[in-house]
Length: 354
Image (cartoon, rainbow, N blue to C red):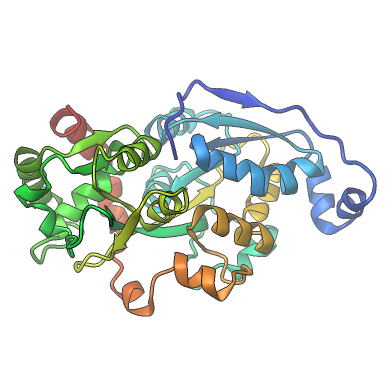
C-alpha cells in the first residue's frame, strides 16, 4: 500500500454490459443485484500496487463489467478514517466501501461508522475462514510482521524481534511509517510482554532509535527500494511484502520471530451513510470471489481469507504460515488499539519519524 495523496481521486467511465458472457452474467442473480445497484460505487482504498491489484482482479472483471462505475478515493488510512468520522452525522456520506485493516475496522465500528453486514447479500462470505469473520467487516487477505533480511549479506539473521536491539544492525534496519502501530505492539511484546504493553514498547523504541538509528521510509515501495539498493539489509514488514520483493529479484529471506509474528487482516466494510449500499454489496461479494482471491494471492503473496480459494498446494505453502506458526500468531486486542491508535500515531510522528 504505497502512499498516494488523499486528494487523488480517479473516476473511471461507466462500462456498459456487452453481449456474450457479460450478458449471461447480467441475467443471473448477481447481475440482477448489479442492475438494481446501478450507478457508481465509491471506494476508499490505499493507492499504489495495492490499488492496482484491486482494480485488476476485482474491480475491472467483477464490478465494472456489470455496468457499475468505480470511483476511487485513494489515500492513507488516517486521512480516510478522518473523512468517514466527519461524515457520520450526515444524512448521506460520500463513501460506499472502505478498505481497512482489522484494527481500523474495529475502531470504525466502535465509532458508529460501519454498518453491520447482511451476509445473505454476500453469498461468497460463506467461504470465509470462520476465525476471521466479523459482522461489520469482510476479511480479504492476511499476513504477519516478520524479519526480512538480505540473504547475501546476513548469514546469521536475528531470530527474534528482540535481537534487533544490537549495535551490529546500526544503520541496516529499515522501517516504514505505515506500520507504526505494529512496531509499537512488537516492542511491547518482547521480553515476555504482551500486545497491550505498548507503554513499555515506547521506551524500547526510543532505545532502538538511539542504538541503531533505523532508516524510516514513508511507504512499502520506498522500503523495497532501500532493500534492493542495499541502503538497508533488514526490514520489519509483512511476510507477503517480503515474498513480493523476493519475487521481484531482491536476494531476501524471511525469519519468523521467536515471539510469534504480529498478525494483520485486511478487508473492507460499508459505512452506515453509504450513498449506494446496493452497489456496496455487489462490490463486497466480488472481493471474495474464489477465482479472484486465488489470482490475487498469487500476485500479492497475501494469504486469502476465502478458505475455498483455488490455490495450488505449493502456493499455499509459500504464502501461508505453518500450523505451528499460525498457533503463535499474535492478534491485536482490537478494543485496546482503537482506544489508543490516534495517540500512538501522534507519538510516533513526534518521537520516531523525525
